[in-house]
Length: 413
Image (cartoon, rainbow, N blue to C red; front, side, top):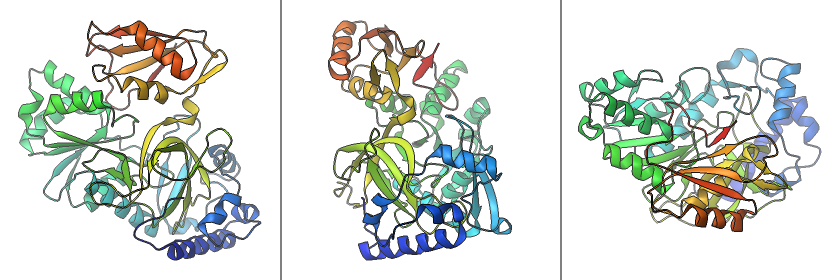
């Protein structure tokens, strides 16, 4: 398990004991799960996992927050819901202390990701319901920047506002700057002439892919850095430094992170280049705390100090456990396809076209690239590494659609 450079192990153990005592006192739901002593971070591996389906079941039984709510309703200052992309959304309550912690954790992440006090940054995520909206807006303010609340659906107007308001940075999904560049071209505008210096992305695995980063940086003549967060843990809790090898976690005074095998749930040592599913336990969380929560996020992690000088652990989100595709008798994760394609610097955006479940091979992968690419060789490489039969279809650069919000990597037909 990762340890924060800001806290000694004994301090983290103390915070965990305090959190566990709080859960036992405030929640029969958690008291029933804590049948063994938890006196240190290492003891967490003896606690059963918590899954989103259990949260949904508790929410149906005791709406709107479910059985794991630990603070009185009158102490809550805000409600968010998760995006619900893989099932019914889950409601999340925040006390004033939770809200302040969320802003501070996010503010530090945005500073690591290159947001400066002299920036005027356009916030271009949806403001409705989920924590990427107003919660991340307030985290951006905590970073010291001046925030312009743009949201989604105003792309054409934003092209006018960037020079008019002296906007220097944009915060949005990975897809958004590519979408906005295409809108600029339709309007006869050169994105490079609008005056942006920096773009911060969130919400889509892949901002570290060289092809996508090159496309955005080339279109806008900016630097690009990624961030990471989860609505039900902390809305933004990691920022990518200039070294571009994972996002530095900023939540380790307020959460314990574990790495487990996504198949059998066994603990995976948190060390450089290790891969697995992230599991979260809140520290100092009052309203909707989580205890050994399986996130479904598949990640690669680094524990050694970064070349930037920071010593905090880093993670790179490569995909979701529930994104798995069944190709006859073989399980394939889209992020594994993306990791292999990323080794070919001449390739650009890509997507999987999936029909039926299980999918009858070959699994079709559409990828942007020059005419000279050897699609058969890439298909053979995919099969050799992932075990399924593939068909690779080349598309001209700029062919695949990009959305204003999120662009899915899998098109299901």
